[in-house]
Length: 112
Image 1 (cartoon, rainbow, N blue to C red):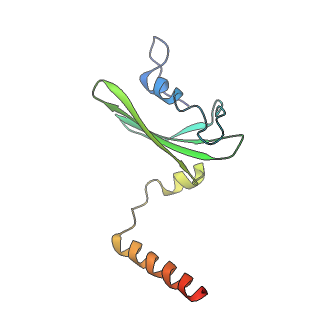
Image 2: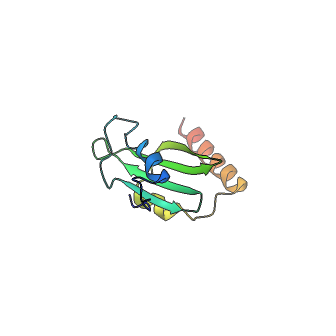
């Protein structure tokens, strides 16, 4: 990870990211260089990690809130490349979600 270092050790960002250094699936450490910054904003960072042991993927958002830091994360099936590719895509619309639901529903209804 390449965060800006403060003169006194780790920055707030690095300290918060350290909490996310363990795979939530297998419990092993991600290791150095396995956590990548996808998006770097003034008050937030979007991170992606891939476990070298179980190959699971994890995404987390670190945010400066008030006087501290907050994190939220989730296990995902998106690889680092998938995450980068989809990061700035427009979200799907309600109509696209409904059409997708109808398509899947019709496809599985016909299979019975």
